Image (tube, rainbow over the protein chains, first blue to last red):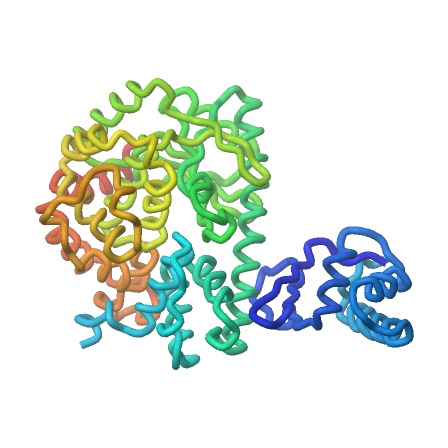
Length: 90
Length: 368
């Protein structure tokens, strides 16, 4: 899987905000508030192909979290990203 | 009541404070943001939008501690707008690169004016709201060849007042100018033409994110930007963005500017008194360090009418509430009283350009 190009993540105050590219209109539906781990997954993997296990390994390396919890969280995050259409269509 | 106290409005104070942070990195005084409610933020944002400074202001607002930031959805609106401006700038840079390549392939050297060229003076060029792409071509063969090139590309090209033409290219408006410095008085034009020819290197390369081309050197650029501001002020008015451009140029290029020579030029153009008032506005209200001005302020330069005019008028005075058009309540202001106001205001401090404005506007519609 691969994230859409030009996904933009920024830290605004205490929140991580992600914007979808192609902002012809000011569309609030293109703004997402992310958890820190979701934001870091995008930053880590944008612009390259990766698999779910790569993201799990990254979370395990970055956060102090148990493997089972990392697996569950990553799957939840990626499912949410899929639903929002943030991956390049194959 | 509102007219007299515009500089003390909470939203104006906050707007100017955020602008100083965006331009110079001046620390944000958090007390100014205490008890700032959503309607206040809406006013700040509206002001920034009308002055086409919303990219700078939106970014500055996001640097506040969370507690002082605007609430949603205003915050999201600012974030989105900033991103939108960034994306448009990226597109514009790509088109500048493309057009530069087309002109150069024909053996013409285009000179990028204003817009993306002056954006390079900003800490983050992508936050400056971009307008049109303005190219200068030397009068005669280069200008005519560039014109023919665009006509041959089947583009719908049209003429503008002021010896210019324009067309749309991939959704962006592009203009060709045959005068680098758009003074209106014929005597001033003659002088400026000589001045330009006396420069050893009137143009310098500019290389930015995604494009490479040429722009005027800082000396000519500062005259060009200032005369451009005046040319709009003697007409319908101008927004704060154009003043920010000059302020950033002074801040970043002051070592390269010959202040005595610039002062001589403005005196010769008959605009020195106006220049001092503009410089006062840059220092007093926009936070430019006085030592970065190219020449010292005159004692008589103090004024607050210029900043008030600009704050009321917005970008190119489209929205000046002091001159409402009763036939077009949501549209642009009523032009005739605004022109009379400008004429009276600028005649004593920039007489030649003020008198020439209406005459040349009419003549240039017929003579190209």
